[in-house]
Image (cartoon, rainbow, N blue to C red):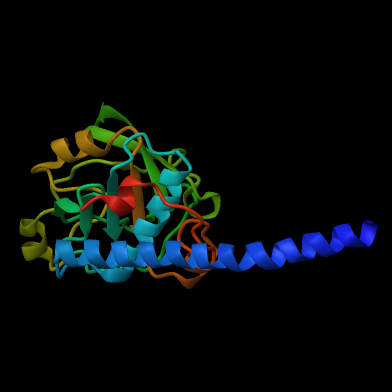
Length: 243
């Protein structure tokens, strides 16, 4: 009887595992198809596909975990692009639309026109990469500002401690670029143009996903949310069935 039980368990595994593999492949295909469809529907040449694909994948993990109070919103900041180009993108994933895009600054010690160096260490005046969840707003020296919480301890776990917040700044403008050949830089904060920044912050505050992208191999291979080595087991329904 003992050996019969072992045989039954083995046979059940042989039957179940292939089906599970097919299901995982089906989920990954749905993710891929949805991502491509969404990207093509946006049709914006400023939006890098890799930044979009990785950001959307991590967002789906966070949404499935129930960590997003504003579950339909995804913000991607693409620090692989020149600071002279629009690299801040706000999406409504359920509606598959780009709600807003604009310039956005990186930290003073992260680079000149291009971002090169990132840090999670206080007083470095560098930007942090990875996935964040937006938090509360307050009024400070830059007016309306928004705190955020980094959810990846190695890469951005200190953003609140470092006072890395989203705010506006007059050095984030086409005028500054024309005068200095590059965008102005912050002390590590993702600073936005003064024009239109208030409705953006009010829209995304309080529990939406914010992804700061940079093609750093160490980050991309080790991040729980960015890596593609770990298969997605399931998906939030709205994120794959909305048209």
